[in-house]
Amino acid sequence: MTIDRTKFIGGSDAAAILGVSPWKTPHGLWLEKIGREEKRDDDPARERILRRGKRMEPVAIDMLAEEYGIEVTARSTEAEPIYYTDGAYDFLRAQIDFEWRVSQEIADVYDLDPALVGTVQNGEIKTVHPFAAGKYGEEGTDEVPVEYSAQAMHGMSVTGRQVTLVAVLVGADRLLLYFVKRDDALCNQIKHAEIRFWQENVRSLIAPDPVNMDDIKAMFLKPNGKPVEVTSTVLDQLRDLKAVRASIAQMKKDEEALEFAICANVCKAWGTDPETPPADNALLTLNGAQVGTWKRQRGTHLDQKALKEAAPEIVQKFTKEHQFRVLRIAKEA
Image (cartoon, rainbow, N blue to C red; front, side, top):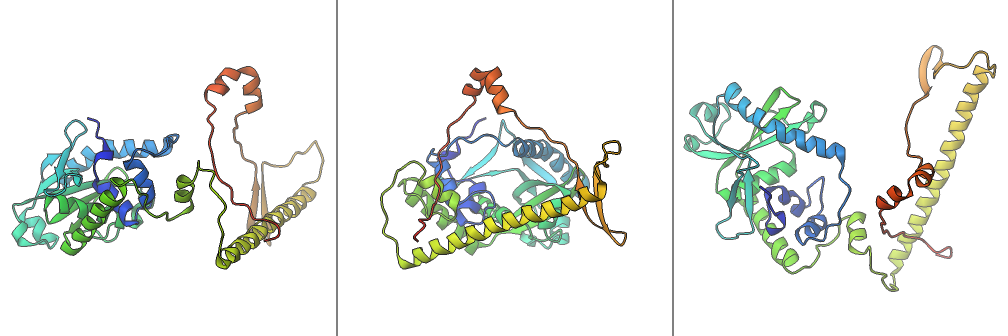
C-alpha cells in the first residue's frame, strides 16, 4: 500500500516542523509536501538500515509479548497500516506501529496512571545499533531522543491517547522499554505549529525561513538573481569569511608540509635499498611508545577517462547535470 505523504502531516514530520529533526529542516519538509523536492540518488547504506528496521519490527513486537507479557492488540503492516486522522483537521494523521493494552502489572512497574489499566495505547518500534544506544536514557523512563518524543506527542494528539510505549530494539536481541506520557500543553503546541506550517506554508506555497546553507541553496538554486545592496554588517561578515577561508587554506598548506616532513623522516629511516623493501606499515615510536602510524591502504576508484573511451554511451546515459551556487568575495572587499 503506497501512502502519498504530500497530502498530510504525519508523526515523523513533527520534529522537522519544530526544528528539532536531525535529518530534515522545515524548508526541506516543505519542499517534500509541495512536490518540489529534487530527486536525489539513493543512499544504499541508509536504505539498508531502513529495510533492516522494517524487518525487525515484527521481531520486536513478538519480544514484547514473550519477554514482558504485553498484550499487543494490533500491528501496523505495509498492507494494512494503522492510521488515525485528527477529528478537526484531516491533514493531521498518525501511523501507529502497534497498539497494546495496559495491564495492572505494567502500570505498577512503570508508574502509569492506574486509570489507564485496560485501555489501549500507542506503541512505536525503534531499532538502534548498540553503539548508538547511548542516545536513550534510563530504561522505563521517557528519556528518548527529542525527535521521537515529538513523534509520540503528535500520535497521542491525533489519537487522543495518554501514553506511547517506545520499544527500542538494540542490535538483534536486546529490547528496552520507554514510556512517553501525554503532555497536553506540548501536544497543543505541536498541533498549532503543524497547523500553521500546513496553512501558511504548504497550502499558501510560501517557504518557511531557511535555517542552514542547504535550505538557502535549495531556495535560490536556479534564479539568476539581481544585485543586492548590503549593509556594513554584511560587509564585515564577508571580510570575516575571507579571513576564515585564508586561514583554512594556510592550515591546509601547513598540514601538507608537516605530513611531508614526517613521512620524509620515515623514508630516510627506511633507506632506499630496493632489495629490502619497507614493511607495509610504519610504526612511529618514541622511547618504545607508539606515537603514530603510516599505513598502506587499498582502495578503488572509477577510471572515468578509460570508461569514456570504452563505453561513451553508458557515460552519457548516467551523467547528470547539477547546479550550485558559489559565494565569492571581491578582492577589494
